[in-house]
Image 1 (cartoon, rainbow, N blue to C red):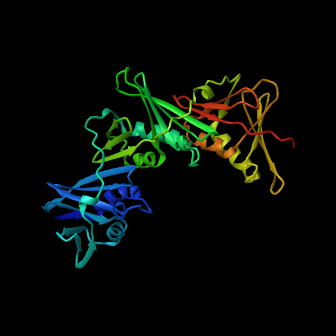
Image 2: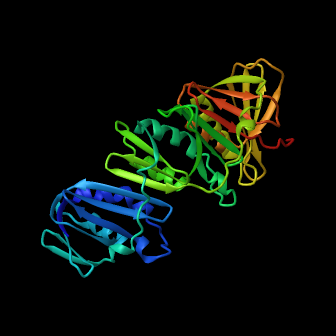
Image 3: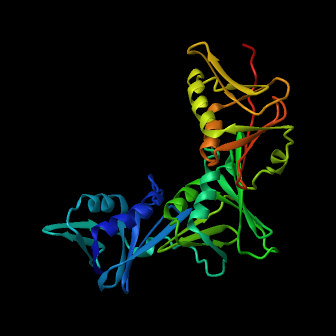
Amino acid sequence: MKFIVSRQELSHLIRKIQNVVPQNAPIPILSHFLMEAHEDEIIFTATDLTVGIRSSIKVKIYEQGSLSIPSKRFFQLVRELTEANIEVEASDKEMVEIKSGSSRFRLHGMDKEEFPSLPNLKEAVQFALSGSLLKEVFHRTSFAVSKEDSRYALTGVLMRIEGGRAIFVGADGKRLARTEIPIPLNSPFSGEYVIPLKAVDEIMKILVDEEETTVYLTEDKIGVEAGNTILTTKLLASEYPNFDQVIASRSEMKITLHREELVTLLRQVSLFTNDTSQSVRFTFVPGELVLTANSPEVGEGKVSMPVNYEGERLEIAFNPFYFLDILRHTHDETVTLGVSDPYNPGIITDSTPSLFVIMPMRLYND
């Protein structure tokens, strides 16, 4: 195998796939890239046995071939080189020689036959949509995914396909984010796919706004192809909890809130919470919302803003950091908060099909 490649293009390609390589690889080959020189392109593949990614670029190939190469060491070397081009040549003895200007390096590779193959998606159901649209729905839901391994089913984003639309949900038991988009699949097709958060993060990195993206669906895997890169992932083998009942909660009052003003005030008053009491009291009185927080170690904060509320005094407490997370993932000038009492969830919506649920916290007397 022998080829010459632009250092900048090679570095960009490796950055796309590097994060898939496991930090503590259970078997040595997983700490490697599979590097293949074929016809007029080089193809790099990385996998952790759950998420796999393959990406390619056009180069000048002098001799075809393939070999695995230590991912971390190779990436570090490419970043440190300064010449515009890099020449890579591999011998039959699993040794890779790298030349750049007057510099020469040799890296020990491994037999390509040991590298796990990525799944074949030829028989998968598929549909296409814009990269920007898929990135947006993942952005609006993945932030709410549980980071606790004990809640295994909630450590991924649910993609439910039904009736020619795809519904995306992220939740951790304290908040929930849901959005949906139409997709070009016939109505009879349906399915549920829980995508691991690591895979979602890596998918978002490969998406290109202006390019069409293809999504592949199988019973236990999905794939996403964007440009010259394809990512595949196993799905979480766990049934996602039924979230419809939470979303169906009736909100007796709907209050319009200026998003940026509320973000500013929540950031101010959240400074007066502590690690054991991350709670802000929302007090609604006619025409006004008062936000208060206090903790013995810090002190007390109190701020207010005008709102279109005309009912009786209503008090409900929320975690300000969860509320801020939700507000950061909306884009309108105003959002609508639906509430009924201090014990039921708050439901936040904007002008899009997105919906956010935040569970209330216990109210304590001052």
